[in-house]
Image (cartoon, rainbow, N blue to C red; front, side, top):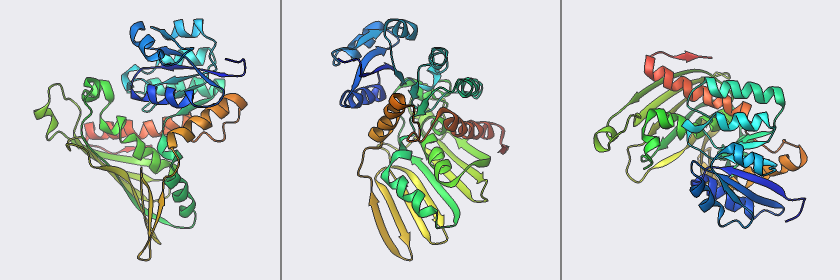
Length: 325
């Protein structure tokens, strides 16, 4: 280990935490130095594959014991707030996986403190880093957007917290936020939201399910375009996720495989050739090392706008009324 290595701590021990840790460990000059979990044993187990890493049962213990250049926050939605607060107080940059919270108040307060401090942040909206997204952004500069259709159609994750509204916030907040964010990134800001949710299947099949398993959300955009995003978590094995954008010159179909451009009855395919998670990590580590945040595509302030839209959808579904910004 050299002094030039970038020291990283990771809060969480689930899939995202391990994915980021393994990817960071392969990057030159990066050292995965610490894991934090709800129990020290869990953190130590996660740290074991990394020669210099130690495990901790609290964020404070980790930050007191290790001099970290940045921290990755990979925890369920209900666990956000206190972790970010401590990092802001100590002026330690962080990358946080979406969604950034369960309510509006906690992320709003954090966004204000981060803005005041100028702290470097990144949020894990990795769809922004796809090659297909780059191509879509380029193509849309020369086209007039009419409307968009988004979707996240799949099965219900097996973890108990996801199935409870107080644990995940529901599918639109926890999963479909990726499609909302992609919509904002490519088509601009949302000005009005109207949502309808329902519970058709999962509450009768599984115990403890309080999240809706179907939903449709209509959104008005500043540009005058409109969009509708549908989701379900009731399909065994999953189906698909993505965004279709209808323009004056044809249709763009964007998903995790890439972009299909249907123009004048001609189809052009642009495959995703690079790993968006790697690009996301490279952008953040570059910013931590140099202070140049230009490669980061989703800061906390930007992610807060996406979170507002998903919270508005939940509020609209509960009241039966549209929510305007």
